[in-house]
Length: 468
Image (cartoon, rainbow, N blue to C red; front, side, top):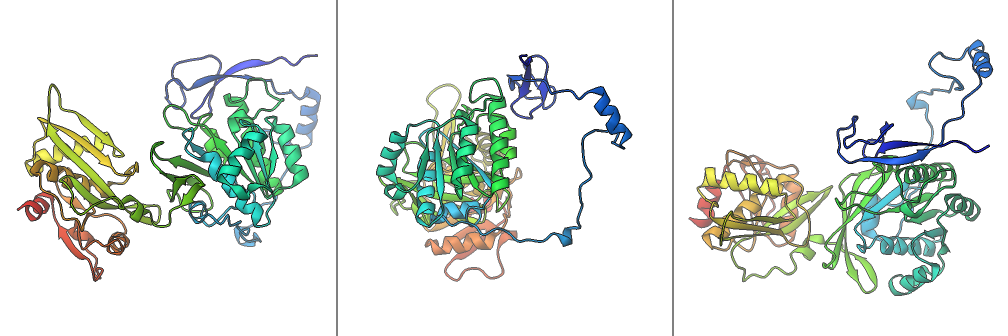
């Protein structure tokens, strides 16, 4: 007898179910997130069985459970598993020190950014270190994977390869092979025969990810899954996919640039928002040990106006970046506001502060802002560098080549302090900077010897010192 199926609509953001499609999810309030999913009804228990359980003392809140042990936290024995070192320093750093056995890692990013490349290099290093690996490719044929490995990872010859999209076959093969690391490329191509629907739909992605997570925990195999991204930049599939896994890594970078940034947006075994910087070469992705030197490498001493250097803190790593601002006379209509790597609303806020508190009017000027290297500035410590670069462009006077600007700008034009200022100043000194402009309250008691630290109260004091 065929099992009757029913269609439900599930929100890709919060996972809530609905009986019919609607433009807005009633649970989380997001629009256009309800996706149709075919589900089989649960098998209902017989009334006699339910009555027997109730007689046996089953709870009125549910049936079929068993009383479990609840040890005290101090009585829990064991220690953290030994991490597997991949030999790629930046990759291990982002993960928190290496690959944790039994963990599940989701790697997302734009097409062609380097997701498959970095994972192929990782399994090649692990295989060379004596850890068995299995690479499952659902998008490319074994020959295509081999050709790419010959070009980008020549030492990947010993890696075991499986071209399969059926989840049951993948898990059965991995159970037989017993790899230390399993790579599934990608989760959107995998399907299970227990559910109806094409690979990549909400139900298939969620169920396949949940079973792979269960396999990782039960066998101790570290599982890496590749995830596609949507037009909005988020990882495709239900939001619960990111909740299921232990770690979410996201590849950032411009397709035309030669470097990539690997960022940890979730990590149960290490710090969040750690980044690793890689350079794309003909031999694959190479780790960059000093990102500050990479992003400031093309900065010349004979500079034009509108260039300023700031120091951001990505996770636990300080990193120097160049910010370029250009203010030009508007040719027609409403002036343009274009920013790359910096939040457009934050830029509008700073322009209003510069107009109101510093007397710099941008009402008739087009404003263009660029963070060199394709990096996104996410913390407010770069506000002071943005304000200095725009003021430098308006006055058409270059800023000191050996100066760094670190601070948040408030609506009153005041310069606010930032966290871990001493670490940022030490990084600036190491990169050859000689003067640092920061908030008064952030001036450390013991400043670096080769760096002159100038604590300033507001933008007016900064501009008077820079432009007299």
